[in-house]
Image (cartoon, rainbow, N blue to C red):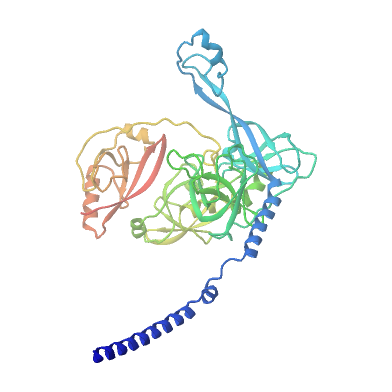
Length: 518
């Protein structure tokens, strides 16, 4: 028993020593990872910092809101009368109150009538004498423009005159006459704006005047589809500041109160009609050059080359021997380019030594150059650089979005021939095809079918006219077969086709590259 007791005492001493060591290590760990040390690494926001940020927001809103306006107008929308059942006499008086634009249609069944529909948007005062910036889509086809000011306790709505609009940038100018100097906003520098910085959107969403929302710049350099098929809005600012219907035309401002964007659109997937955290604004750097032109000339005059262009792909970069540029797919008749040495399948890599990375760069450079200016294009042709001089014309109204011609769709004729390694069926070109595609000077083969799982799926469609294969002119089916055999023997895993197609009545020339496993 004595030995057992002695062993227990020794065991107790060992345990005490171990506990002492562990406690010591724990204390050391607490010192190493104490709150004081952690604060030095990531100091929390102070109450004073939060208060300063709040004050900054409040001050900007107080300064900006008086220069933001509400815009209303009427737009005639066509509507076809529908057949409605005969209404019992005892219910006729009740239903009469719903006749007109928002209720039961007036007129005979099948009759088409134009209904005045209210339109609402936002804007901001650019000049103290009453010039107001908004969006083209707010004023498009509108009449009876009215502007509500908020610089004073004034409930009146002022009649406004449409001065000018530019669908290419979706910017427009209205003018009101007032008996006082109005507060204005100034344009900031959108190029220097950073992703993650605070911004505020101000406007009249859902007719709720003077609504302020805050967020950050989510992204820059976005691209949006414009008001017509010829128009693309580029370099767009994306923000999570809530933008809804009615915010269009209002300012997106930074914490200095400068306008760095003009709110233009929202992303609303599916059946959602409100904000989902993705809104878009036209950058102020774009507006800087457009607004003065609209005030002075009512329209923006842009340079015009008269060519079709297409983005380069990995295959076409390899094929043409370039790593950037815009690929020329068509040269329009009686255009400035037609009077120059520019050729189809040239790749434009620079304009007056200014680098052209892609089609957007080329459009921006040409569009910002005045008509009648002579420019020097650097192009790559047959993998060699050369220069081509072109005197620009003025962009036709159609391409500037100032007219919307209705164009009838036409079905492509179908026929059959042999299927090729590309997964397409072709036949010879006929006189009817030449008339349909307006390509009388050309020869080629017509696509009549595209295999659902073939290499050309999504690249070619029925009715396409194939003019060249890897720059080899195609005149008939024999040329087509020979060109494909030559392509098969090369070390390329793709072919590059020059194609003419008709889309919504418009003749389009395009370059198509198709990856192939021979």
